[in-house]
Image (cartoon, rainbow, N blue to C red):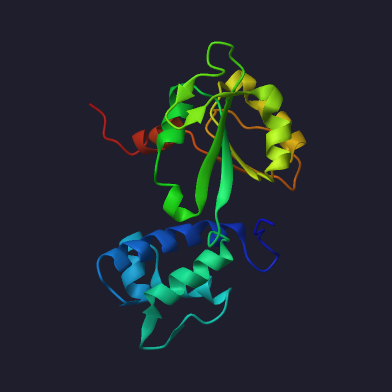
Length: 211
């Protein structure tokens, strides 16, 4: 079952936990065993007070003056985020973006495994892309239910995103990472996150100096 924010833990706090986990992983790779909220804050540009407050929602992970044991904190945050297990993920859309996502190896050591790649184009169905054979959308329901897959990545054109999202929800998917540049409508118990590089670029251009 997916972790869901309670009334006592704001969603914005949950959203910062993966940042802490990533920074801790980097510190561990550098050979460090102990860190502090000040050091994490400097790396993430988040105040040390905010980091301590966020972590306090989940219990005491360190002692005043001694900091946090990195290995222990990684273990605890991984448990909170439920990435101390492997989640199977389906990718829908075998275009350039979907292929790039399916080839990305950064998911594997962070609790996720791309299990299947789907598309509805007859020209793509059956094609071998790396370790995957593109499967038809008509098989999505059976595969998702049989393998109890809870997470999907949506890499289809905007005009198809809603219908595919509906299909995923019907199949039993509980979380969707949407790369399509459009908001989708899903039941309130379905988790959705959006990745649209253009909106981030537009955010940054506001701050750029003109010619």
